Image (cartoon, rainbow, N blue to C red):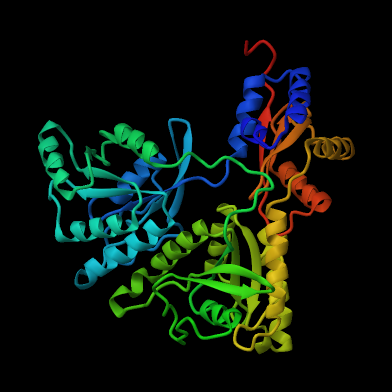
Length: 482
């Protein structure tokens, strides 16, 4: 259906009816169209920021995302909760993967930079390669150039630390890298970042149009994620029916990404093993950072994230961070509680309490209790993945959604605040993968009421195994807009 590109999820007749409703309620038609288009886009394109240490990557990332969030210290072992940020430029949104994590051990510097770059490039649609113009191209820079060429992704070259006219000549020297025009910037002062970002947008694909009911080409992609030594490699071996991945008691023995085509439940699936990194002694401090980067790369490539939790340990902050990363990336989610066969009655009792309190944010995700070692309940994994994918792709027709919203608002109106009672007037589902809704309201809807709507949407329409995005557009007062 060609009209889907014009009207988000709505067919022509549905769209005309919807716009009539919007006009009756006093909404600006352009506003409504913009809201549907914004919400209807698929996953955001990804920009990887790569380069050797001390060239100003994290400062540049902060400049791009418009806030001081990425760590800019150079001391070893600076750990961070996240490596992926959302940015906006010239009205377009995209994700930024920052690889400027921490200063690596000088002995392993080339290998470390390469490892970071590989993980980030893998996740990216385009790369921003940052070089210190005051130093010029080093051997490490040349090594990163080789990686970029091999990956074949579009590249923008940032010549950083150019604070004035005198630095322009230094920047011009970087033509020698063979990556095209170097863009002179100062991440510290913001000089030249506008032109740089304009070029970045030219290299990034537009956010993909939403497609309804169209199957993605090739096998469905599943990322196995979880903290180190939780059993990801063992699980992959068990579903593959052979030892394809090195399994070692030492946490973090997997370094190279392993994509496996595996026959399971009568279908072929592409499993991405994300068991993280090989912990070399001098890289201990940055191991968690690498694991985060690797996980982010795998999740960006996947449609479903199977999150492994080690039931023999308490559910940790690291588990929570991984779950948050998967939810924020908008992937379908399955929770696999591993090593279930090793639990005694007491641990099982306490685990159930932990699940109730710590796993509240993904209470909607299918749950399987498995043992990667013995193969217990592995047959339940495929139905859980299929359930999550079905929820992820569910589409509610606009007429049915508005009938549901009408009943909901009548039975449970928004609380009165400051003498006013905001009301949901109508809504539409603008996208799937994950489901994205736009609600049009007469006033601001509180976060608690939005959560209530999400809960009721799940009760009514399922959406098992998928995050739901709800955006709200408030009607402008009549006369404000022409």
